[in-house]
Length: 115
Image (cartoon, rainbow, N blue to C red; front, side):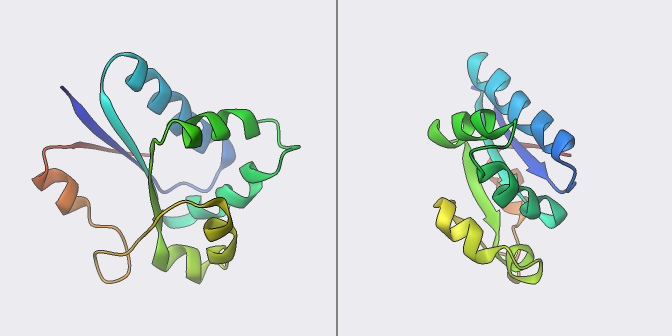
């Protein structure tokens, strides 16, 4: 089975939406897929968590299917969305000096794609 880790760094909602769409598409194709939220994209989480956001349902679908590996703890803290991420129940990742290690994913056989 193909394993793909989608790392989102870009803080633009439309870029993040493509991460979510690709995660669902890859899962439907039988891939093992996971989403890592890094960099400026951590700020998108509280925005999409709002029930009135047009992309809220898409975000919830990815969340409910368990496709989020987690969110970078260091970036969430620095960009002041740590509490919002915790409220959403998404795991906080910090295995590389407070950030997320891509190397770990590569070692585990994941293909890493960045957005």
